[in-house]
Length: 155
Image (cartoon, rainbow, N blue to C red; front, side):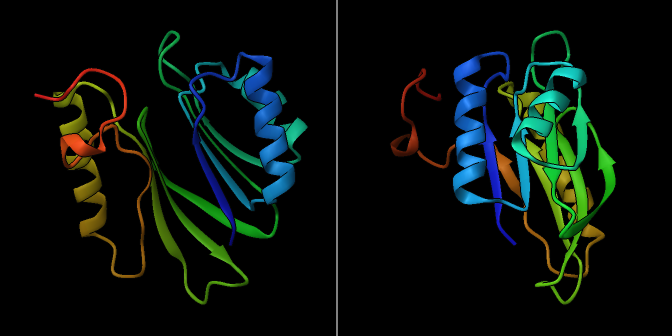
């Protein structure tokens, strides 16, 4: 299974949409996870069709902040187990996977308190999983200051 995860920081810019289409054309992912779409479902759906995907799960942004999109092709089956403004928890089945793989797709809030609440949700989700699983996304967190590139330093 081939997948693409991207914090696109808004699907309202033509260059972003073009770059996404190019990446999808080049890499041919079976699944695409977009964070910070900043667009309502109708706009995200239009971009999905232009990128050639048939299936979707969309979380609308709150105002112009956030927004998640999960697109997939018909070569895999995805069951949505839980969805919020920061997490889309799924069960993924494909011809290459002998058992379902559980994937919480995650976009971490920049606010420390909100991010900790999201991590608590991931811990709750993971405690119920007995099969293979992985967490994919932008965690909006670093382990050490050496990982930081741009932005203001973490205290």
